[in-house]
Structure formats: structure tokens, C-alpha cells
Picture 1 (cartoon, helix red, strand yellow):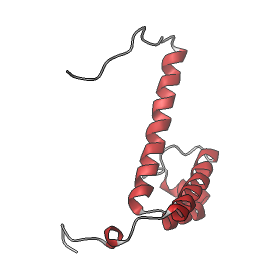
Picture 2 (cartoon, rainbow, N blue to C red):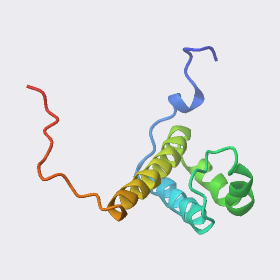
Picture 3 (cartoon, rainbow, N blue to C red):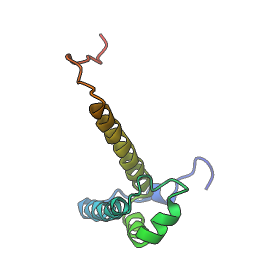
Length: 108
């Protein structure tokens, strides 16, 4: 459909509890495969051949059991979390210390 038309996914009802659990289980299996094969960013063009050859069936199961927007979100979040954790570990290894006070992000 056009730019503002509803997609097939948008017209489906949201997944129920059982479908969400199936999705999350498939995601966890796929992510375990990625970790076992040292693949950080499963959306990166360079890693796609390895993802397909090493974890292709699990990825297909993940994509089949989850809403497409969730698939993209989960993969992006995984990569961002890995990047963030490695950065924190590097800072700690370099001797970084937590701030002695808590930042107040609220505006008055």
C-alpha cells in the first residue's frame, strides 16, 4: 500500500502471552548462536553471510515467531547493549571511578 496505508502487520492483533513467549524463546536461541559464533551485530552487512551460515535456521525461526518491528528492535538493542557493556569494561580497566554524586536529570 501507499505511504500511509496500513500494512498487514499493523492490522494484526498484538501477540498474546503464549506468542510473546515463543518469540522470546526463539530470540534467546538465536542470540545464543550469535554469541557462540562471536557475532555482535547481526544486522551488519559484513556479518550477514556468517549469520546465515551459522545461525540461519534459528534466525528464520526468530523472524517467523516475532513481529518484524520486534525483530529489528531486539537485534539493535543487543548490539547497543554489547557496545555499552564493553565501553564500561574498558573505562573500568582504565581506572575510571563512579561519580561521587548522583546527577539530577530533572528540570524544574
